[in-house]
Each structure stands twice: as structure tokens, then as C-alpha cells.
Length: 457
Image 1 (spheres, helix red, strand yellow):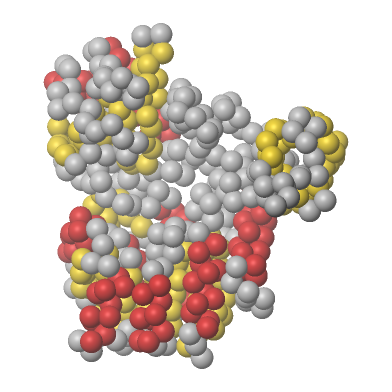
Image 2 (image 1 turned 135 degrees about the vertical axis):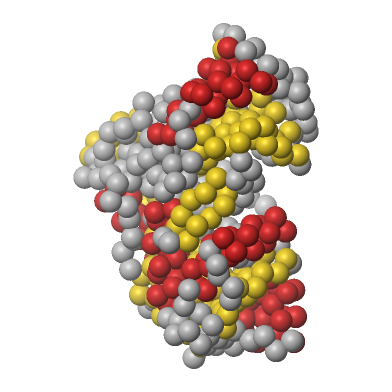
């Protein structure tokens, strides 16, 4: 078998033209058909790059000099952008980001889904694409005796200390600054993953944008938090709007952030926020969208595609804490939500009660098991809504949808590639994709959400 030979060698300096962006924001250039991925390159730019690594099907390079800049290139606003791994697109203007995301959705629909003639709308972006995240969770470390906290450096576990993050709401920045300062003052040691010693692993801040309520979560290795009483007193005094201080204990040697045990140290168990007119109770472990403003845009589009008159039964697969279910319930006869995480279903029931919504029924289980059971009981959906995780819908669920034949499917996706794959399966099963609307939930990053509207042919 002949050994693979790339058209370039490691450490070569070559001139390239960038053609595209990868799903993680790297520029793509091709040399005799061989793709090179280069951080910080933008489509249309001509540049000199150094080849740093070669694999069988692709290689990596480093940007050395740009000869011709993209008209969409801008100076990143964040001082630690080049070190931090939190954002990928601050060097691309917001107009350029929206164009790149629209292209990404179109490309995967054609390449993976073989869907050539589907109408893809321009991306619905934000008026102000900064300071949108209502939740921050950062690892804590130590440097020169003081506590540091921030995002990991790209492709490493080295913490880049930060006092502000331009995609976080300012209130979260304040929480992280104050908690580092107060815990440091009272001698709390940061967790060290090499030695498995130390106390404070992560700090999480949650902020209700409409209510102004703040939750502080201290994730510790140990049950004991040194000087707990003084720390709580100072946090509650120094951070305006704090309604809840919570400790989560994670004694395991793991990269997973949360442990099994969560306890309220001070204040309430939950804070509240709104998406549109619907009120949500948010606990330390609740899944809640990090950009409520754009979540409303996304759900309004899902509701528009569902086109409910008040007489329909709707099934919401992967319903989470019932965010979409409760939106749909305002216009549907009955909504059935299913979700595998029991705590999320409990939150869903509480949120329905909180809003006085009684035409929703939630069940714990795998969508691909529960929905066929409902089908056998005679519960049939006129409209079926799916909002699956990044891996997309389970094959058994897609088979059930095809068998159940709801007149309409509304697919809410956080991963255009698995959306394209699943749309192809549904099309082969008798559905037609009418249109797709991308929504920018995460400006300055390559992530793009989308809503697809399918009709039974």
C-alpha cells in the first residue's frame, strides 16, 4: 500500500487563498485539493501561511502574513481574544458572521441532506451582538497565591484569567470578580486537577435579565467551605440583586462540572426570568437558554411554522424544561412533552403551574420509546416539534414520526449538520422541507441554530 503523500511538507511557507470557514471558525485553504485549516483566516483573503501539521486528509497551518484582507475583517474587541477559547469570530464583522452562518446552513443542507431547492432565509441576528449570555461558568485556578478564573486557553487546560467577557452580561462579570476576590480573601484554595486537592473548582453565575435576579453557584470538591458564613455575608452584601447562593459538591476526579449534591447556602432555591410573557423558575442545575432575547426569536419562528389554530394536538420531543411546550400551549388544544431528564420534567411541570397553563402534559423517558407508546394509546400529533441535542434525532424517533404521519413537523436545531442528515431521512419518509430559518443565538462564535418547517406530502 503506497504511503500517503501530501502536496506540501511540514514547516513549508506557502501562499494561499482562503475559501471557507470550518465549523469551529478556522480559515480553509486548499493546495491541489488538499485542505489546510488555519486559525484567523477569512474567506477571500490571500495570505502567507506556515504548514504546522499534516494528516492523511487535511493539515493545519499558522497565519504568517495577510496580503489581501477581507472587507469583513475587524479588530477583535476583547483583549484576550487570541488566547481565550470562548469565541471564534471576533475578527469577523457581525455582517460577515451572519453571511458565514447562512452559507454554513446552505452548504450542509446541500452536501449532507442533498436538499438543493430548500429556501434558506438570511440569518436572524441581534441588534447588539455583545453582552448577551445570562449564564457564566468558569474554572478557578491559582496564580501567585491569588485566585484566578476564566476560560481555558484554546486546546489546553490553562486558565486565562479575566475580569470581563464581552459576550457575558456585565452582572455575571461582577459576580465572578467579587467571588474570586472574597474567596481569596478568606483563604479558599482553588482545586488542582493534578493533585486532586483544593476546594473551589468552578463558579457559576446566573442572571434573570427581565427580573434582575442573580444566582451564585460555588462548585467545590469538599463539603466544607472555609469561612462559609463570612463568604456568604460578603457575597450577599457586595453583589446587588443576589437572591440565591448555592453550593454544588463534586468530589470526583473528572472534567464534568457538577457533582450529585446541590444545597442552598443562602436565599432562594431558584431565580426567575421570562422568555416573552412566560415566566421560568431557574435552579442551579436547570437547563435554560443562555440568550433569552434570541430564544424568543427562535420560538416565535417555531410557533409561526406550527401555524396553530387552537384545535391541534402537539407533541414536543426533547422538551427540556418545557420552554417550547409552554409557547406552543398558548395556541394549541393540547401539548404533550417528553424528555429523558427527570429534573427537567419536574421543572417543566412547575413552569406550567407558574404560568397557569393546564393544557400541557409532561412525561419522563426517551422520545423514541414514549411517543410510540402514546401512538398505541391513540395520542396522535397534528404537529410534531423536535428540539434535539447536537447529535440530532434518534433513528427510532424519526421512524415513529414517519409512521405516525403528523401533517407538519417543526425541527429546531442547534447543529446544522445533524439537521441536514435528519431532514434527508424525513424527506425519504414522505415529508417535504418547505423552508429553513437560521437564528443567531451565539454571536462571535460559529454556532448557529435553525428552524425547519416540514409538511407531509
